[in-house]
Length: 302
Image (cartoon, rainbow, N blue to C red; front, side, top):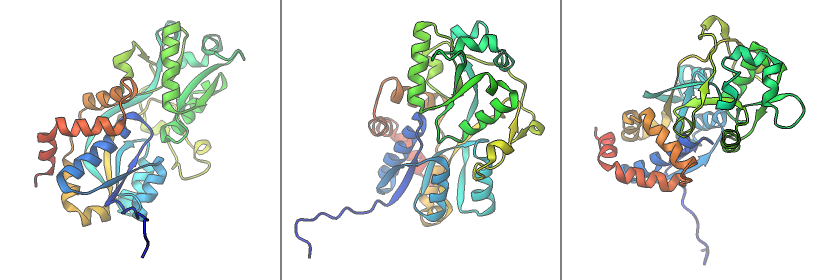
């Protein structure tokens, strides 16, 4: 018998949390919603996308709140379609991805083609080396690798230093660039609070062409060099994923996850609350579930 020692009980389930605002909010909304409706305690664990899928297969993770496609198409094919160890909810949220310019940059850089003009991209230089910088995403995002592929395929990787840093750091840089009228071009996606906060412009580029979008699985160490994409991103969307074994064990929770119907406006509001208003994900989510109690109850109904 151990005296004076408190042994922590394991949580009933584990929810993977991505490192972007809406994913952090959604993970916590699921935590509080599932606790409210089913009395199950969830542990939130921050994980990269590939590690989350490995965890979904091994049983170490039960739910992933935002699986972006086409970013993770190869991973979805492996774990959902081939192995059938992961299930994607049928409802999704529409999204898009591309490159955006601040007002200062949009005067001369209006399209992807302009990024191949060194005389124009020189204006994006902030460190004095004569070469502009372009933020392509956080180091662990699958989209970051695809943006590097697009930069290589379009050719502008030769004119620009491609920067990988966490989104929070990049968004501070966007705020500063707009405040000082410094031209900046950066990877962007929607739903996202940035479009409510600033006047930014999406760069024009050739429409998506499946024949020119050749993305190898990110599990291949050489996937970037083996891939090519000289066109715009295809239409994007993201869905909740859960371990198939978890769904079999908790079919009531699986039905709950299948009914969740966030709108693009709500996802934008989530990211705004966390990044602009600086609300903690858990505080925001707890209040969200309380304020939307009737709707959350509806998700739990058979």
